[in-house]
Length: 133
Image (cartoon, rainbow, N blue to C red; front, side, top):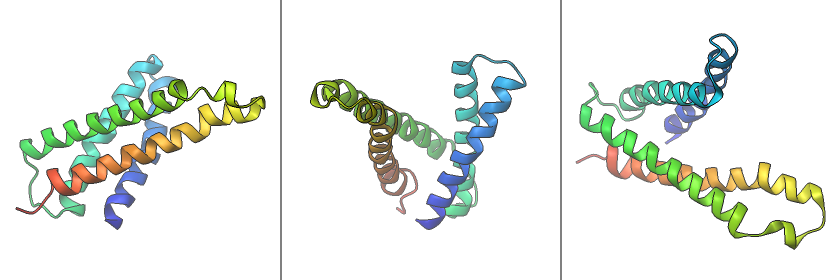
């Protein structure tokens, strides 16, 4: 589990310079740069997880496909939780302090959404994709 966290945090950090280079050096639109940088990091992360974290000698197309479904699923969870909290809880009517409103939308909600997303990702990684049969 520690290795899984190391890989996840490393590739999260790797995604930032990839995104920077794609936008600043290649002048790609931000939406396209984020898609390419994220996908490249996810593909590389799959291979590192497959070998170093879970100990498989060779990757398989089945695990690769399952991994992409799991990544897409955790993104849907993140997006759902984020939108539910931002739009479902009308925080702007709950408080009159602008800082709380801004920090709620831009700091607290993404952290909560990421927590749910990582939990789903852990479950799919350990109980579905790389489970021992």
